[in-house]
Image 1 (cartoon, rainbow, N blue to C red):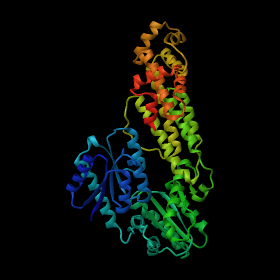
Image 2: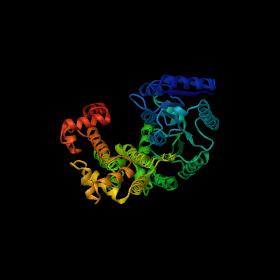
Image 3: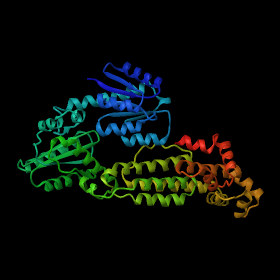
Length: 492
């Protein structure tokens, strides 16, 4: 048995080294390479590899987008992520998408690669040995061949004909998150057999499985709602049950899978609902994606400005406004919630100079909301403890009035300190002198406006406290090495 492997990296030395290590490890490893995401995706669709090693940062389609697109059509593909960047968010995003491993290139060893490949090969071997004609001993149907061959004309129809589905009889799919190995699958298959016997032959009920989810297929010309309700009652302990629309064509099975997956994913926003129907999601109003993005930028701006109470209040409102969305928005909304957590986690670990090893990903909007609230509270407490009350008050004054013509003497007066004493205390507690801090803070706010608005450079300068355009450009270039105009162009 062979293991089909693809290596994707735009750094030729790394790519060549990985290919060499894989070929040396075993003759059973068939490996090919691609230098970018677009090329890799074409090869994945053509060759359907068992495993993909991919860089995260590449021109065009990056490694995370390659994962997303691949797993939508080939969910059995095992991914290992490679990167030069030891950044927390990349690891979390890769894990949330289903990456098996996450490697820093600077720490990558041939033995790590060989060990991972051996585990993947052992898993593939065990699954093949345990099943006969795509059916496990439990009676559960494995969907591996279905996913890898479904684009062939008529294959879906032939596949389900072989597994006993009737032709042109209504059916629906119920999806739950995958449980344990054979024990959980056996429970679903046993339940299906029990209902099949109870129906007196008027219903076809089968259990099927992919890598990340389990399905129950129910097909009957009568009493469909009764069977669905019974199945939901049995499956609800596994979490939200996603239910597809009714289909009559076995060739539409792939579409039914996507519908059930979308409905089950919507359970991210409602832990109390036992089952969500895809047709119900289609009737919900669409989300205003741009509005949520804009408010997210406001939250991050508040964090950068150390206005933590305002950031916390707006974050709580942001999560509170995301309800169960329309079907077309479900995946976007789930990923947006998880990315909000990532953004605030990065701010937290940057502020307290620590790096978390926790790669767990929130599984509901409630977990996301709670984690963000806890992180923002931690940042705020850390900030308040770092400086004395008088310097904290001075920093708050700077953050609220940086767009005005303020001076050290004015800020010192606000906290009832002499300029000389305030200057020494500020440097001791903050780590840099007043003028440097004010300048860098203004430039950070200017950068946000350059990146996120179409305001003229002169307007941006005025908003951050520089009434003379030439002086703003001079200061910006002195500290950033390029002019504001160049900064804006490089971002575009």
